[in-house]
Image 1 (cartoon, rainbow, N blue to C red):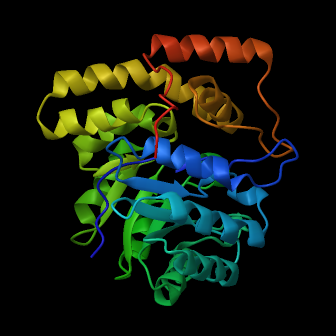
Image 2: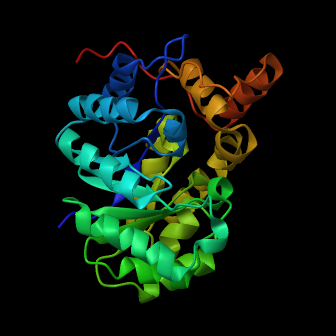
Length: 303
């Protein structure tokens, strides 16, 4: 039975200047990040610009990532789509590529119809069809919906649904889910901005955009917490708050990609209609990263 513990970066998808896929650069990023004590990687989450890719590109990205992710680290694949049929199809593509689990963002276009019965039916159908475990993804900033604890617990009753990535940041709701969910169900923080509070509430780790550029610090918070070194964990958490906000709710994926370029990884361009951050924002972000103690990667590692 697969268990979810530790830190997972949601990998950005790498593009050429022409916006075509650049899988070799994503694989290079994976190899560099794999030197850190990460539990694994999420491929095609929100930071992977999932909604910008064609079906063929998604399948190609799953396969390219799996080639580079070490067998010792888990590969989680984002397969959420607006229809149950398409979600199941993408899930099967992720299985073919060798993913260990899939993460499914809830459908949200027809918000008025997305009640407990509809959403539980959607996720349970995916759980039935999937040969690998399923993780629920609650991302209200992008979907415009914040699934309630009641809805999530109904979904989580399915035996093949093993966890939740919650990016909403409602710690009381997170605690209620952890308290009431079936044995073995794991909750992962969806942002480094509330990683330590989530761990205190019983989360088992996090899927964190910031882990792409600060893997040591994010893993360090978990390690300090597990060892009872709460003062150390708190200091690391405080240090990362501004940097996390900059590459998530403030400037988003374009800022994360610039930060990766700035630090020696490959971020590259975003896909339109997203636009790169401007020169002034780049300067501000570089200062924020420096203040957070987030420095360049050693990119001359021989693999």
